[in-house]
Length: 139
Ligand SMILES: *[C@@H]1O[C@H](CO)[C@@H](O)[C@H](O)[C@H]1NC(C)=O
Ligand SMILES: *[C@@H]1O[C@H](CO)[C@@H](O)[C@H](O)[C@H]1NC(C)=O
Image (tube, rainbow, N blue to C red; front, side):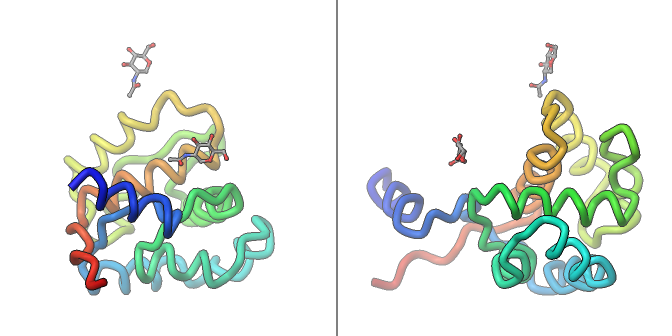
């Protein structure tokens, strides 16, 4: 088991090994859509990487992706002007996010001072809370 996890980690360089249900991923894409292009431009992220992070929960450790997610969260008013994540807004705006999930994930990220990393960790925390493990490797 440990060997398999190690292989997943290092070959794909994808951090998250959880995937949210399809209808939640689609709803999140829709929520991000109005700000998607602007945030790709401002963060410099590869648009495919940004798309796949939400659409497929393929989430690499990519600093531009972190700032893309921060841009989206700021523009959707999920983060306020002093860099605090707004628990109630996550529940209101993002399908599947319960008050308990929002509370836990905001608490987990509260000490992060880099706002891009903070947004990224919030995103990962929610994906893990809502996700199921990827299916086993087929090869
Ligand atoms: C992500 O990358 C940063 C800097 O490149 C590194 O310090 C950090 O440990 C990495 N995190 C993970 C989970 O791989
Ligand atoms: C945040 O920092 C406070 C004070 O240092 C600490 O008590 C708390 O456990 C930290 N929270 C997390 C999630 O690391």
